Structures are given as C-alpha cells and as structure tokens.
Length: 77
Image (cartoon, rainbow, N blue to C red):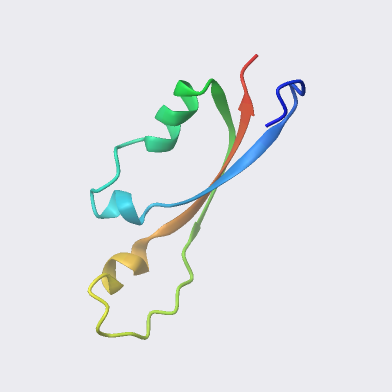
C-alpha cells in the first residue's frame, strides 16, 4: 500500500471454511484490520462454487456451506 496515498484501498479474498471448521480465530480479518489501522469499507459474500463430485472428500459437506468473502479495506488516517 502506498503510504503517501490516503485513498489507497486493497482487497482480501477470504474463505470461511476455517470458521466453519472452528480452526480460525473468530473475527480474524476484523482483528487484523484494527491491528494494522485499516478500516473495512465493503464486504461481499458469495457461496463457494466448488466442484464437489469427489465423494471421498471428508470436507465435502462443509465445503457445500462455505462462502468466499471479499473485504475491501482502506487505511485509517
């Protein structure tokens, strides 16, 4: 991120599969945003469209419920 540009924004693409499996720290992206003085300005969430034809995948049922989340962040001045 350009330190001289106060309007700089960036995106984080995040899967909530770790949340579903209880292996992520709760509100991980929100906590990191605070730590690094960033503000979440937009959030878009969409069901993951994975090819789930592999019946041997032990995570298949969890993956059906997982979402892809896009966070837009901006630096706090």
